[in-house]
Image (tube, rainbow, N blue to C red; front, side, top):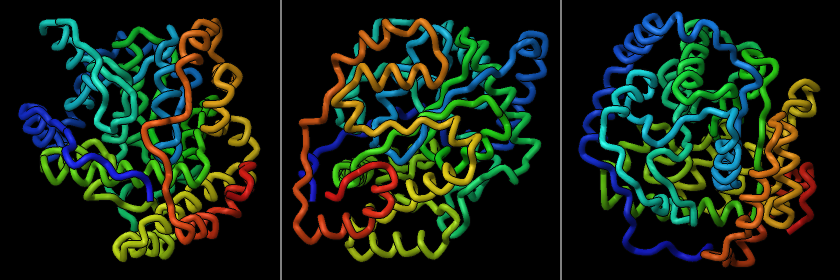
Length: 373
């Protein structure tokens, strides 16, 4: 097992955020209507805005997606969601207009709840679009149903709302390229590529031993934090984070029996094996899709976390070239020196646990160039 998390875990959720977020979650159809009303009010402003080469950072949580998001978010062309966009994510223009009248004092960066060295402010980039997916696809996090959306998926109401939402966010942020960190989009790549044929995807991957250790650490941390503060559990549900914590759910990649087996392993205390099997399911699904779809293969760049830590200049340059962002040398120079492998925890698995990780992940890990652990 990985090193234990501290006994006291801070997962603060402000009372007003809890109350407003709860209201919005209970009245999603109302907020969709408000979002559409906002769109009509802004028709003249957003109609000329095109959605060109949107960028998605996606993959199983704890592989480095936030780090990559922060690099990309600092490019002058990109526009992404921020922490302060929640709770009223459905109406980004009106909410940011309102925030413009609020006091804008200096906010010191603080380490985020994950306790992973990443420091944030209300204006830091964050994953927020999952709220929209959950609204229009209510079963998207149901482990008993396939969570995969592919090129056969059709949902005109969602597609219209989503495109308008992106245009409004581009207007708010003054960018020309939409950027999203959305871990669950790993099961929606073909659908997104159908919606945006010029989309670019960045998928971080991590050695299964260290990936499982990080997921286990986060699960323990969030379980403790959500137990101490029940508002945190509701917050995680509302924003669509089920990767760890008291309401952790396996991702169904089109195999209901496989997802159920992962859930049973977790329930039976086979934590490590269950996490390893989830790793295999997610990245096995990705490998299958890339092998079968040349267009998707061209649109996706897989970035091993270990290579990012060992050769940050090279990997960041490759990422920026893949997503077609020019004039980005300053981003590489600014971020590469600060990228390193984590030292705040280390895997301490037993021999049996290491054997379980290898047994569950070896075949898929080999497809991405990982040697046997």
